[in-house]
Image (tube, rainbow, N blue to C red; front, side, top):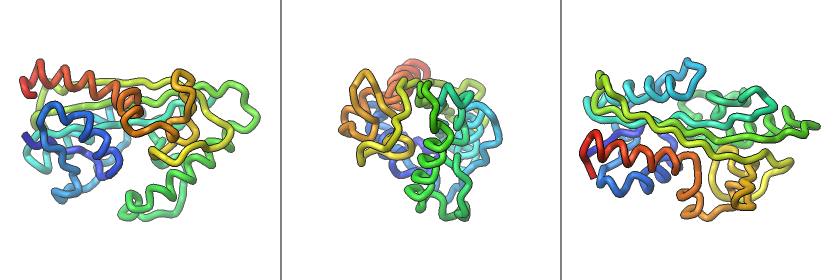
Length: 209
């Protein structure tokens, strides 16, 4: 079974590909099928994830899965939230945004540290909301949510991962997300938690894997 990922983020494709491998599905990025990025106009992860999944399914006439994820910081009222991927406004054409993801990530991290300068409460969590549909008009989307608790460091640590991983310290693992081995991260992360829920849902409802 082919499952279209409503994203062109290569690292997200790799992570989800590993996590969903037990289902035996072929996960394909929408860009490889000529599908453009969907708009993300909503204020919640679940609304954006559903919109992205329907967009990908409609343009490929098949099943699709979307992950809308981000970082929510308590002291910032939940920001950056759904705009986590483009928290910092930098001059990048939309067509180049994925290829320049490291530039955007670095700008996002700098802005986050600026906003938290002098703030004592640095509690935060990564959120991953996965939505899977069998077709664009599927009335029964599968929804899974993972939350990974941590706190924001005062400076980046680690070279792995992507996004805010270098700034997210995970007390339970005594490490930043960027310092974790990929196998360890894929076991504990917000996306891992959501993916495990999705595996169960797909097996029970879609009867695959």
